[in-house]
Length: 288
Image (cartoon, rainbow, N blue to C red; front, side):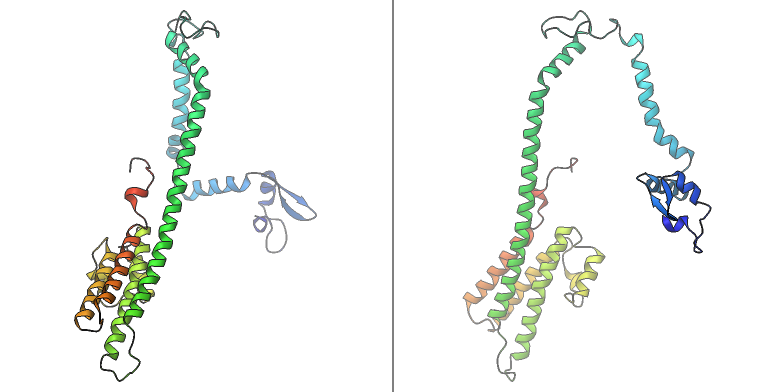
């Protein structure tokens, strides 16, 4: 760059002349870059110098070039044409008429020349269908993500509505209801974050655990109690089990409210499970 061509005192460095040869010229006591591949060349040289490259590395890169040249020389000799050269005597002949020699090769050329337009049309339809399908799957996954966000809000709303904190702080159940409600709401957010981590493929990673701890969603040994690979489902089980426990204690006072809460948990689990489904929404890639 310009700073490497001029020293701190403002005089030209020893490398200025070499940089000039690489596409840099002097105009009005300034260094001006021309449209060259100098920077790319410098990057390759630095990589070769510091990246452990040696003569064997370059030999490995050039072996394919040598192989292709050798094949061209080998198949270009007379013994590769037992019926003589050229491969086809004439360019104009019917598929059903023998060209006299090299029948298979000449017929193949004619077939390809006559049908390449049809093949090109077929390829266009195949690629168009593939792109359309890929876009459809992309839209489906984005729709699923919106559904997960909506289901998470609905679950938090159901918990807050079905478990209202008593207005009287002196109520004997005040502290317990407040504590249980805060725990269930935290679990709802924890399940949502775990669903997103599941979609990213890092649900069991240490970085995922640290992320949840930084958000304040993990408490105690909850991480160790979750089922590896399906941690978000574990959280939905905790919420529903807690709701059943509160119903048995009479804090959730009706069966209908319990069913509403369980229904919200079920919907959230369904949406989270479909967020990044690999079974029916992945495009085949390399046989995986």
